[in-house]
Image (cartoon, rainbow, N blue to C red; front, side, top):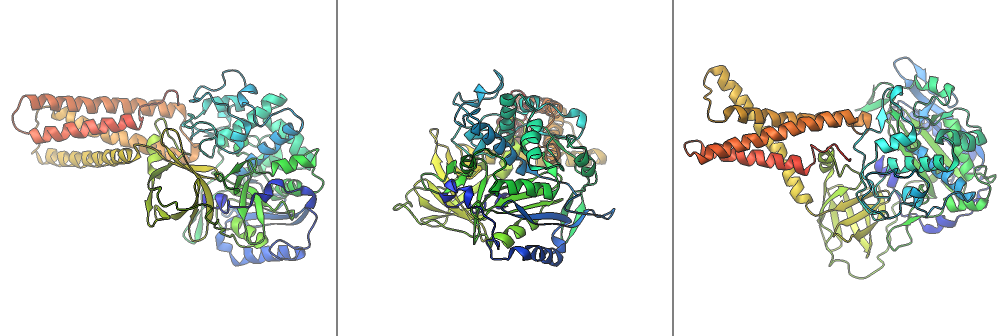
Length: 615
């Protein structure tokens, strides 16, 4: 889904000023399919690719008209519940964010918000407590996902309706650390998008869910869509969401993964849920000549204009929170999304007025297949080199996603996503064997694999950090990443060594051949502590998918256990140092124990495994 989201971000900036008055109804899709044949072509694909989905729903709009809606497969295979376009609800995931951006632009149209104003002027005083910079954070920063936040340590989802918080409280609960100066690094942020929804609350005095119902859902007649975390703002949706079963692909089959009822606390970022036909009403409104969401045509033109470019080039990468994609016969705007329950995609061509929406109780090919059926194959448009010799600047190094846990007890997890960039020729680089990078401008490069290509910005920050901004998901090469990688590998090796030594000791105890030595008890306890420390990390990793972070009590208890492990390891090192000062046999054993425990303790400090406060 990540590659699909950022595919084709080389769309021409001409989209920045497209007038919606050109969105008259067409007789055919951009790919050349007659409008009256779209449904039969979709149904043909569905019948020929039944193994590609448990169920999915799709709708195509032509300006203000619904061209086709259909649903295929089962939302509950075990109970034989078939999907239908007007009675089955699916989760929008991050497509919900576009509702935030539309809401913001409605307020902008009314003169109630300045997109370049510091959002702290709209929020309660002292709202943030983890900001690293005093620089203004604007609504455009939130739309462009470059306010500087990494991922939040604290859970953004709960499984009990009673644990759902008010939006403002949830945002203060899960506030991530601001790692970068606003505008410097793109880092896709659910927190930032939800914060924009809270700004809507603060300006209007309405809850965000009430605002969306009144100014979007009710206006468009979307009677079968909910936006609240538990979907209980629409009883009809609430009841039908209980029927929904998520499925995961396992080889050529789909395996049931339960109802996956996870309630998103920063809900403007991803909690919308409804029928495909309601989603089609929304997509149609975005491209309709009647322009029902705004009073003025110019407001929609502004919404569809570019707000972020690839370096100094004219290649747009974001339009007020909407992403660009290039196909053979159209350049589109849209967004995709994924939740624990399923996946979604919203795609439309502002010029032709053709739009496609898809929803699914899993993730897979239907989204992209429907887009390509309507807009043509995805294309890779490699920009021409715009300046002279660029081979003198070496881009090699280790990079890490800016959208990761850069502070706090989950920092260790971020290291699992390290990617090496290696130079293979004067102007070409390899990224972990997954992509190639070709530099085409002083501050831009092109990243591609066999099927996907995307332009991205390159820059060097004041502290020497190199940034590769790929639309909403930047990667950075910071000083010390190689040392951290070595330390992480050492941590893992020490845990494995501790496990082996404990097994050997157990065998000797059973065989009656184990011989105690000075400090042997605390050394043994320290070996156990190392395994416990790794076990805590394993537990944190196991709950991340469902919770999208840690509950604070999980973090506090886990970090407290890590503190005990840290203390035991240092005590073991101290005992070994003491034994060494006495001389005698076993020096090598004590030296190795000192080095192992000190290295392990250093890793715990560097990766902040004991840090649960102020994150």
